[in-house]
Length: 69
Image (cartoon, rainbow, N blue to C red; front, side, top):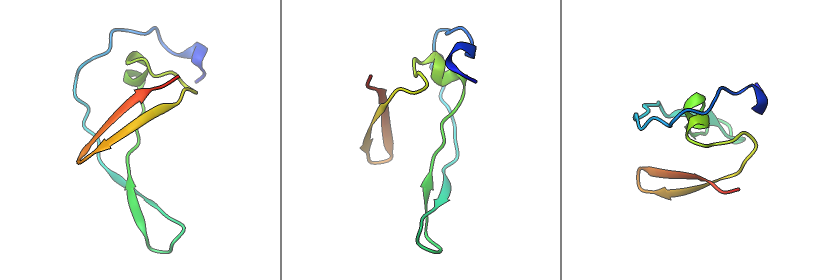
């Protein structure tokens, strides 16, 4: 789906999202690392645009994600 096919932007929902932290493999055999995948129309509604960069600030057990360009 390209940018022209995205639905009309609606007011973002403040509804909390509940996701599961999965894992991804590294190049080192048997080593797994935490993996979190974010996707959905709610990201578009919140103003995140395909192809733009984001800044992620990390705190203990908290991530702050902000679009930067």
